View: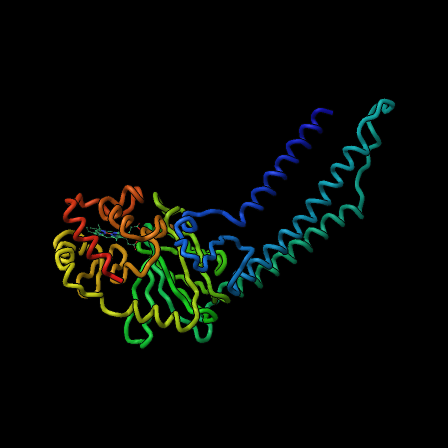
Length: 356
Ligand code: HEC
Ligand SMILES: [Cu+2]
């Protein structure tokens, strides 16, 4: 029977491809992983929901396994009966005419109504329970409140400083203390984005003119990567999220750096003046220098490890290439090339490199 053979052949290829994909899925190489500094630091470059590190992500893994398990059983039973019937009841040489026709069977009809109803009911209840755990309506006790603003195509974070009398403003890379709930308030500066760090939280859309919430609580130290999960335009794929969970002392140290005044260094005064003379200051804030808010805050630029929301590692070369023409690194992004002279470029980059 060539038809059956072809069908089984295609089915087995499909199963093999799916199995290979899911095996490879555990180590998907995203640009952010490639860009991670290779200095042997803890790099949790894992975008799989099957290695959770936070309560909502644990819940999501559990329900994923439950749904996958139930579907696997249904698949095996249905396909098993199908294949068994194809083989057992295939037409034999001695068969003549139509086979015996059977009409109606109360037990069979009852079974295929009641069993699916029970399955759907179980899945619905489990899903409701998960949604309640994942989508809290109020901040958990003792949480750290962080405002997240999605921009085309980078992330802005605002959180209170340690003294509680000021705000830390940073971009793309967030540092959080391990074991403390993080309550995120989500805003969009333009279009719909979606905040998703598979190991930490449930995918949460960010709707313009609407305030959303999500939360996580890292249960171990590490770097947790995520992606904007709602297509938001040209550079949607290069809008990476990077959360580093550290112990309390390291978090306090990070906060101290982020809330300190910008480093002032007279040897790069020329670069600073150029930053003010050229259009840079209209789009970027540097504490004590400028307060543009269209682009990322650059006050502590060099405390970050990547540039352009994870498009490249941050170092002197990539910074120079970026300021020269961001479009070469991130085509279509919202920073234009200002077509600087090499001497201007040198001065501005020298200045930016001091912003630790
Ligand atoms: C029209 C507004 C605009 C102007 C003018 C502008 N920038 Fe930007 N800049 C942006 C935006 C938007 C981004 C974020 C791009 C992205 O990641 O998609 C950015 C990103 C950057 C970054 C990377 C920050 C990070 O953490 O990833 C640096 C550095 C930077 N700009 C420096 C400069 C300098 C220096 C100038 C002046 C020569 C300048 N910018 C002029 C809008 C602007
Ligand atoms: Cu986005």
